[in-house]
Length: 296
Image (cartoon, rainbow, N blue to C red; front, side, top):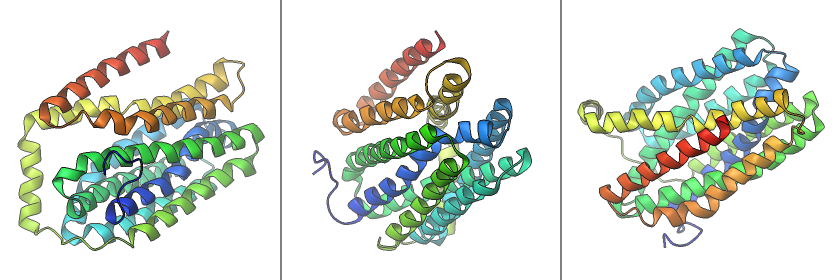
């Protein structure tokens, strides 16, 4: 079943649909947010970058206790609440007009997003057998990128219009997409909470696993591809070139579409630790080459 483009019916498909629903809104948000906050709200690009950096730094820290909360209080209920919180945080961008509210909204958005990602991992671990998880993760990543591509196309329409109303419509769509995500997550069966003592031992055990901690740290560097796509390239196109702003959407659709097409196919070769290590190593070199091209 993992070779199918659609996950099997049941929890796997519901998780994929939930991923798809909010990724459509996120795709529109990613391609428009940088230009909205700089061109419409009037924040300096450096301040937008600083605010997003602070937001995601806070989110990466807050995501740990929120993930532990999902273990102890139940992954489904926690995921639903965090999806609603993310939608509320996105909606708060509708009224942001200054730097400090922008930073606070960015922190709330990143924290809720990080916690939601952790709660989804707990749901996956509790509802899907170990042998099916790699295939489902590939499906979820492909689904994520399919939604991002569709959302980026919608964001391109807002970029072409270039009006405040068009940009605000994007944020409204993103907020609603998380409400839909919460409704879909409610359809999943509950996951038995992990005992408090087990959760603490598990968390401390991860921190003591130095190779895993190092790999996680290195992976955060690789994750810089997202602000490159959603912040660096849009601002560069708008400020340093004569290209139309909707080109931001085209590039984002191209990126996410390529991942959507090849993600599941590439994951089929990952069958154990050795093959996973090789895949990560190859991906790192490819990303290094891509970033070198961007720099030139």
